[in-house]
Amino acid sequence: MGNLARSCPHCGALNASEAERCHRCQRRLLAPWIYGLLSFGRGVLGERTPFTALFFLICALSFALMSLSSGLSLMGAASASAQLRFGGLFIVPDGSFVAQEPWRYLSAAFVHFGAVHLGFNMLALGGLGGALEPKLGSARFAVLYVLAATLGFVASDYYHRLAGAPLMTGGASGALFGLMGAASAHKAARREPDWKRSLFGLFAFVIIMTFLVPASMMKIDHAAHLGGLATGLGLGYAFGLERHPERRARLFQLGAALAVVFSIVSVVACQLSPEWKIQRQLEIQWGLDANGD
Image 1 (cartoon, one colour):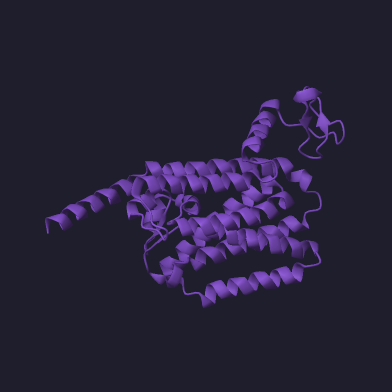
Image 2: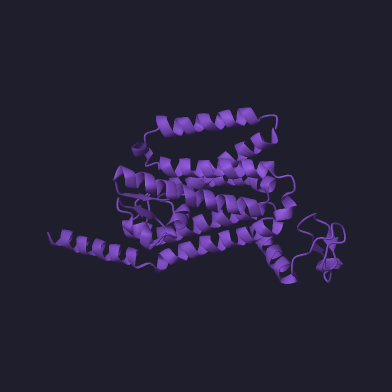
């Protein structure tokens, strides 16, 4: 088999490059080109946590480009146009903005408004992803992350619309709350020895962050956190109840591929959006007016 050997995605057995089915479990193998692409991705992004690394890279690259384009302080000083350009979600009471650009429910998970904001979230992503992705499997992890991020911002949108207050929001924390919820719910579904302690610690943390830390103090989007958390609890519990996860391996591989594609497309779509350009023109005009005064 040599260097052309392919491992089975279901049982891990090595097979000859020309084999169509695994010699051990008899399940169909991935096409050679798909296997080659996956092998390349794992080599670049990491063998055990490729999607943790990928989401980390998207966030870091987005922040680096926004910093170069507008300049940022530690706590964040990017212009509104830069925030919109790199994925920010602008919530208005009538919902008109997101109705025109619904992809921002996902792109907002990859934009951060300061180095401290990015740093805390990426530290959390590294820790949570490093523990959870190998446990759930990379495909399920990718689906979980993207759904928690998206539904977190959907929850934020509807909550702040009801509150009637415009808000610019973004960051990976909704997805991170989803990962925390999934980790605890997965343990509960499998009745692992520390599942009660895990759930207690999770809810204690959520209560402290939600009710004891004012949202205005650190510009925290509590609604996005709770939306991501609810998504993670549901998916984590469902994953924990699975007895034959390999039967849905192809389904989740497709889901993971779509999750990555949608993530990248959402960020690119924000770059192409006219909204940030309109905002930029307004900022320039305001600056000229201010200088003229």
